[in-house]
Every structure is written in C-alpha cells, then in structure tokens.
Image 1 (cartoon, rainbow, N blue to C red):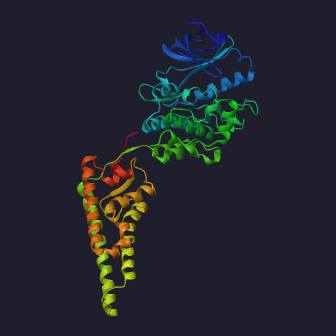
Image 2: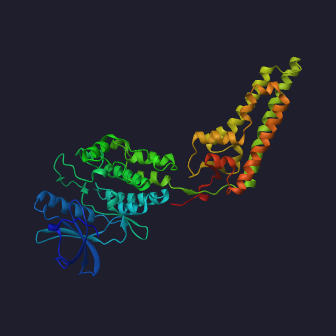
Image 3: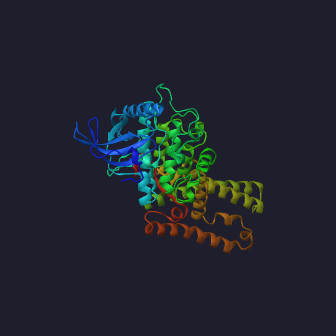
Length: 454
C-alpha cells in the first residue's frame, strides 16, 4: 500500500459510490486517489479513482477528469486498463476500472534492478501496442511513465492511469494555455513548454521508459524541477551504454529516435515504433555446422586459387612473349597486391556488402552480430585479420630479405589460423576463434531458421 495519501481525500471503508463499495486506498496520483473497491452489481473487485477533494471545486479540472475518463473508456485493448464506469456521487467525481494484480514498473526496477534486453523489449512492445490502440481511438496518454505501466504475474503489460489523457476528437482542451501538466521526469519537450501535444509526445515518453528499464535509473535526474525541465528540453538522451556496455548500438539509436527533442525527428507513429523495437529483439540464431563452414571456406579458397592461377599464367605468358626470364620486383609487388586485394574483397568486402563470401551465399550462410543484426565494420575487419593473419606480411620488406624464412612463416600462419578456429569451435559451442574475438556469428540466412527469443 502506498503511503502519503492526503487525509482530506481519503474515503472511509464502506463508503458507497453508486454501486461501488470502497475498501481501502491503494495509491495516489496528481489528480486523485485510487481505492480498492467491490462492484456490488457484478460482484467483482475493481479499482476506483476519485478526484481529489481539494481540486474538485475547479470546474475546468472536473470537466477534464470526466472527459479523459470517458476517452479512456472508449478504448478496449489487452494492454490497456479497462474503464468500467464514470460517475459522480455527492460531489465526488470518479471512475471505476479493472483491478490489476502485479507491480508497476517503477516498483519492479526498484526491487529487481534493470531488465535484460529481451524482457525490456517485451514490456515496451506490449505498452506500445496498447498506446497504438489508444491513438487509433484519438486518445493520447501524456503521462507514460514507469509508475503507470503494470506488469502482471502472467507477463502481460497494462498501461494504466489515463488521468492526463487527452481526446483528439475535437473536444476543447481545458488545460490553460502554457500550463505544465505531467511528470517532469517523463514529460516531452513540447509538454515542458506547455505546447500543444499530439501522439508523438507518447513516443518520447516510451523512449525514456525504455532507457529506464535497461539502465535501472531515470535518464534525467536533476536535483530541481528547473534542471529536469531544462534537460528534457535541451539535453540529448544519455548514452545508455555507459550503464549497459554490452547492449547493441542499435538499442541506443532506437531510444534516441523515440526520445528526439523535435517531434518531427521521432517515428511517424506508434506502429513505426513497434516495428523498430521488434527489430531489436535478440534472436535464437541457427549456427552453421563445422563441416559446412569448413566446406564453404575450402570452396572460397579454391575459387581464389583458380583466379590466382589464371592471373599467374597470364603474367608468365606476358613474360614469355617479352623474352624476360624473371619478373621485375615491382611486378611481383603488384601481383601480391592484386592477390591481397582479391582476398580482402572476396572475404571482408563480401561480408560487409552482402553478409558473406560467395561460398557462404552458396551454402545459405551469413555473418551477423551476436544479436543477429548487422556486424560493425570494425568487427568484420578484425574477423578477416584473425582468419587470414598472414595477409599484412605480404607487404613487409622482410619478404625480400629472407624469402625462404618468410614463406615458412606464411605457411605456418595459414595453417595455425584454421586449426585454432577449429579447436575453438568445439570448445566454445559452435563459435570459431574469429567468432569469439569479434562477437560475430555465422548462421543460416533463411529467416525461417531464426526464432525470436523475446
């Protein structure tokens, strides 16, 4: 039970509001107190939100309270709290809604700490579906925050407390011009300025909510209201990876897009946000088996060998026609450069452009990051150097000084690299040395072989 409820707003147990019997207070918000109650007409447990007595004399606030309760009641979705009844009894304005078991996200994170990425995305996507349904009914929430999102024991997420909701159906906005209403830590920049709001304000709140779930703290925690409002309006979303260094960069980019200061820079609507969040879900990737990977690498090397032999044969033919027995050093250097460039393009280049070398494409493989997304360029460069460590040595002057020793070194590196990769594959669960050190994976390309885990 929450404490700190205003004494002059409390209703005694047994008080009747229409056919609802008040049992006990369970929480308080900016506009009213929430009570556990019993619906005597339908014999069920409900929650009743009653407008605070000290502000019930303000006709504008009463009209807003009634209007927003009716707006929320128009929306029916599994991820939204159902509104059952809107009424007034002896000057007390209230609405009855479903009584939800479970905890709000503020309490969940406070007690359990930050969520894993898959769990946080599940919560965000469910909340976004509920908000999308509200938007389709021309209702924006305007106060999406951890305390207004319930996580039920079943895992279902419910967006609650439409006490600041606003109907977009043409009803006049009874909020005074320039009046700031909402929770400062989760107010959009336009809301901080008292400007007219639209659906994109809820997108901003959703981005901040996601940051909170993953970091375990609020993104803007200024010591005063002025500092918080200034940060909301002017400071970009803090880098989440300072608190969660292992998160993919795409998570921060998505949350930054949702929480962009300019509404025009946010996704077009909640449906677009759902698509962006869904793309972030970690996937259970079907890793390529060792034999198939070895076969793909062998095919790649054979293809390279064919090209090299053709190129060498062409060079020797030119030397023969020119009557030169041995090629000049600069020709040898150019030939080596050609072979190296060919190797780089066929491996790193193909993985960077289309996700895999020619042989990998033939075997229906692709190279991904650990979460199934596109690997970073740096990871692909390191991956190439780990698999072909002898490549840079082809340009070293040492090759001209001690060619025999140099050739032996190249041969040893060429042998050790795949051997080390094979050993690592069997002791690290289908991940070669290049996979482990760069955080990449070789998986089947077919989307049907990937199953979302979140």
